[in-house]
Image (tube, rainbow, N blue to C red; front, side):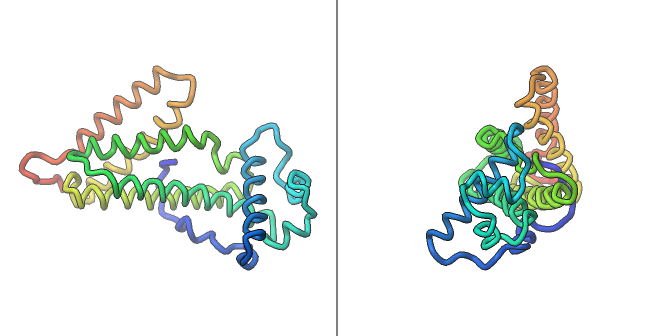
Length: 219
């Protein structure tokens, strides 16, 4: 969730292999039903592999109905991945618009709590059932979404005056993001000791981001 690299934006995948947008509510409902079924297959270890035939059987559609809205299986999987990334970005943007933390520690505490809650509400990984080229595309979209999240947090922190403008601050935030990714994932694993140690390290890293009383940021 927090891995950073430079890559395509989460919206770059939009339109890849997607048929013309449906204009009627019934068509919209079918598209959503296809995507929902794909999400269920991708996130259920006991489910059959994600194929057009398995989707059609699960939905009671003919394969022709699915191809009416998506030209390929890749297009369906990418739409699922894109929606997952966009949901994350919208939720984070909403959070940042509502909060007014006084310190970097408060800012990142609320941001990381958002991701913990998001992961709890969406325990499955959108890309867990992808293989090969689709798995690579998933990582591209996910990494780009993380980059956008980092950009939003940096901007909000600077607007509020709790983060400096120097390149060193950006590097520290990215390192913090890496650690937070592991902490969020570990918080749902059976390793409470390692989880606690990681959160302690994250708190130490966050405290190092705080501005000093004179407002002189380390550049």
